[in-house]
Picture 1: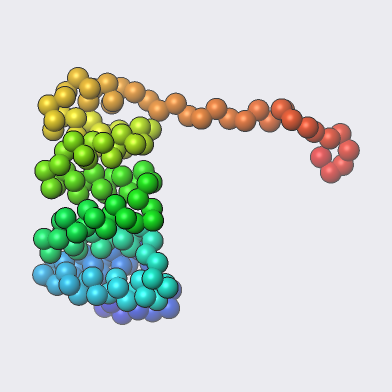
Picture 2: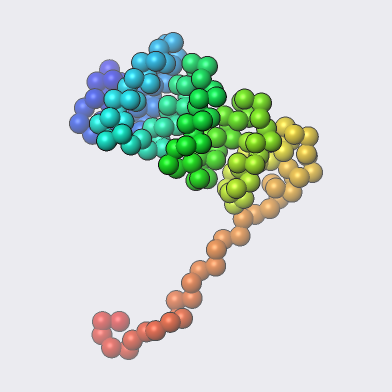
Length: 156
């Protein structure tokens, strides 16, 4: 039923595909989930948005392809984003590479603070973890709306 919904025009939304692929994985059919993602990727001209790629990672891990999942994550076009750092750090931590996981998260200090703290705790660096959790990211200063040029002539 979920596959039918996903195959409808406009039906391959990330939450539907995630549900479908999770069902495949839970039923021991992870290769079927990967095949479905390959079909979607082909339909989209070979491009795979992060939301779908993240589902691919789940299936790959279920199949014991952890190293391949790490490699693919490191070469994905969105690899340098904070949300990709989250996924990559999880994969690295699962592979027992906690220092590398922490390094990935530290590239985005304003994001993923709880994950950074967890990595630090796993590495036995408790005091650093507490400091990370106490730090609040400072928002970027807003541009001064009165700076620059303005007009007194309509339209304002």
